[in-house]
Image (cartoon, rainbow, N blue to C red; front, side):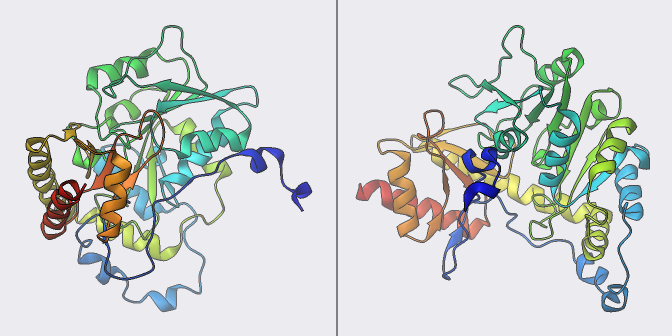
Length: 348
């Protein structure tokens, strides 16, 4: 009964999320969740909720947009709230790419980008990264919309600020800077989104704010672009609970930053340990590591760790197949990962 399904949907690969194990006992280092709980203010924000649920939520998330505008020094009209940052990426593909247009992105990068291009049946224009995963834009390159993940996933690398700024200023199309991991990084691009007519910065509360289960993201950028996205979003795309929880978390930025500092410290410790044992470790500006193991194939190590109830992420393919992506968990979880990694390599 595929006659009712669009050909593009039948033929597209679709997005593959990380494994979510149903049996207990796994150490999950495969989906870049935060190792630590969100702000205690999140629990406080839930008081009085049952009564409010009989009403529709604020369709434009006014209080939350005000908080984010204050956070970044912009105007409320420059902020859009989404049901996760993925919704905003999908809205951008729908709002800013004509039928004869194109979508660009790094290769490798977030695997949702080509899915969105396939869904809208527009040309994909990937930019293949160098062997060391650095970035050089081809001469004469163009696209209607470019998804610039910075820091990039799965490679964990943040590109030089001068390169990103130069690209945004010279690119004829729209640049969506996907900053899902930027709170773990050295700099951000919010200033570009607030000053250039062709730049949006998109963030999520899933990573640094420890709210992956909430599904909330936001975009900041020029008012005409935000207005266009608002036109095509679902009427009530963000529920009342999500709005209250997100507002509480953002208002407690100090809690988020303390968690980020703990993760950064663990990240550097684990990276140094792996590098000392012969792993190739990319310079991470995220809450995960991109590593190439010595002596054994990445797939072999992935399977061995899974057998030892530690989940990491392996991306098969020419560009990514030699590497693993490892989320930074708690210190205890990372000690177990290091211990089992040593055992797996010895066993091989």
